[in-house]
Image (cartoon, rainbow, N blue to C red; front, top):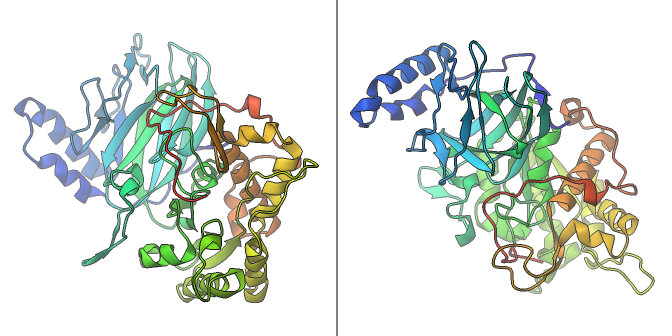
Length: 456
């Protein structure tokens, strides 16, 4: 589950311009190696990397321990690992004892990443995240001597909208992997084994754009997470998730920071726009604000702007906050906002994913205490530098975000959206019967913070 074994090559379009960067001045000892890489990349109209450290396939750029990111490609942010050598004609592989980043400079667009996992010398268990901790491939196990090929889509974006306009990023977004000029993969797991990588820019993908707040955004730092960064692992190639959500935003601030404009500047007819707001909107107290006033009118504006572009809008009701009454039953803290979203979806005759109801069901199924395991509730000193307990009833941890992503997938199926044809094989999910939180596996990423995301 969460990956696709490659059976087709996928659509290709040139990324040769990107690799012209390889021709910039570099250390003289690397020139012959990089010239070979350039000719191969131009010829194959794709980017090929070989981590075997022994046998090297024709056309592949060899990756070694010295391949640190230099503005072109390589291991990134001071991370690395070691190479498992092959024997004779057997292939080697790359592994790491902790999470490791590998980046390649690419322009904005959708990219199909195909990875050969496994080693002839060791059993493997590999998990792959992309960009800001998007779950791309859930743990794939390989026996000693076995390899498996997995393929997934990564959306790469920049803040640029036009020659003189760009998205107004918040301070916390500057330097974020979602907004830089490269595609970054994070390898981790109990025993990661990476043998080869192929990265190719693709067209013709259905792009699902996500507009939302901190319950949707790609949270870059542990232990915070949101459903938008978990849902990519449930789709096969053919669908790309472009998560433009950001913490603390309302419908109004999403508009005013140019984020909807950015989405519409790159969206194509047949794409989707999933819209989830409410947590921060309910705090707006100015004239005309309220669930059935500014919130409703702005939701309709998002819907109409999407339709003008030929994009299918989908309204997602706000995730419920964890809040129980004296009898131990979940209680609504979002006022009329979920109901207003339902009414807009009905009036506009568009699909509705009632995540608010499903989240409430999830909390009730887990119960008062166990539901804390879906959110950022951790005792002091669980993480480095965390000298106080974390007790957040709005923001999810990785387990909770994963369960919510399953709820959204269930909503896609319930609405019979064409997207459902691209879902990876998985049983239907019922939030009344959530997965065991103690059985959820997530290797921690290097970036961590005890600072609560914007919004509540």
